[in-house]
View 1 (cartoon, rainbow, N blue to C red):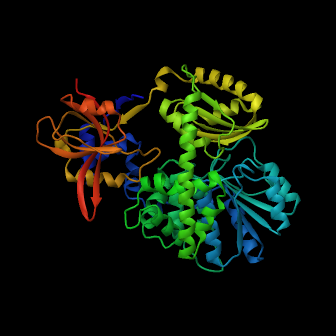
View 2 (view 1 turned 60 degrees about the vertical axis):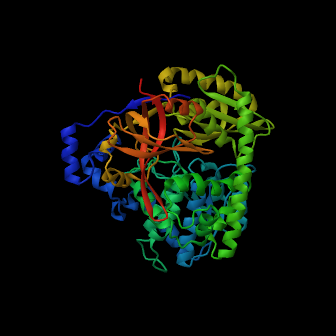
View 3 (view 1 turned 30 degrees about the vertical axis):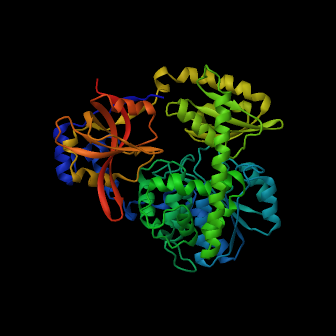
Length: 563
């Protein structure tokens, strides 16, 4: 689908130059900060995030109560169960709490429900098993906010529960157990958008400030926080930016045997690991077992103390990821075949036999390709499991709230959600949610766009621009990779075309500057445009580092003729 090219409003040139001089950075960086809504008072924290920028964990509602209950459990040698979600965020959060307790010398256990058989969150059967196993305290990770009935049942069996979660709150919450979730009402915590692993980390950070059997540094777990936070695609601003930046700095040199094995199997050993490698290479391998079999294998990997065991587990996850890719490819083709020529505002597709662990990936694919909200259902008897992905102008969580009379249950946030529904209600949901979308979405909302940071002449791209741009990483949600527009450029060499990429040299209109340019997964039509003379190009400047050498490079995102 062709995208609109939208150049963002430009900062006043004099102000831009003045501030750039004050901070000793390129004026382009000031424009990028302006585009991302970074105010002057926030510039230092954004460009140079540090441990001291983290918020006081005790500002989070319920934190004091949760910490006191855990300290009591440690003192009384109670049995503690960590109950996590089956995605990479939940897996990371579960491993983080378990490693922290293990480093304290405290015995603890964990449970991750099976996606296909048990579904998301606490369930009565697993709660009963925990009580029968003699557990005293259950701490949830990345789940539990919508499980008040299951927690009430746990209490009746003598189990106490602490919830750590980051999902949106539906309705009023009970007060008979501690809840850590920045989104709960009256929570004064200044940053709401933590991932599940981020909330678990704040609990660890709070506990570390109290007298404990051993002194444990919460910084030891930052690579796990970075892993889960990137995987959950939450905002990379404020506290998440600090946690991910510091975590990525540790990841390449991690002492965790499981992470080292995962990095090795993924072919990243000895390489600089950035947010892209985490999001597209490492976390899919952690997610694969949660989608297809048992997420506990990924937790075992992150807890492993044996390099031999870790490499075997990492290879197993790698095999599962390849299997997941094959299933996903088949389901995507089937989804395309089910699409009607005239597409609804919200695309709803259902097919018996679709793997419930893969439907979220198919929803993401359909949403991205057709730029419409998508809900994919996998029926099983009279009920169906559904997964939804949305576009910026349509909150799928709010939409499902409006349709909740048709659902068995649901949960999620603005851009993604999961649900269970009676199969007979799927057509009613499709009709109702499309009527709602018709009231909210305009035709322009259904056209994806590139949000371009600034127009630039290639002559302006000095070394300092490339170096300063690295201060803005890690990139992700609410801090996207910078996009520049170069106009009336020329190809100075015939493109070398590989399987998924091409490489060429671009020169400026005046011929005073040239850069190597590389593009990935561009349509064939774009290659024809390159031969048409002068071209306009959207690109991201990058420093390509390989075997100790550095090369300034432009990564091409889109091309059009200058005419």
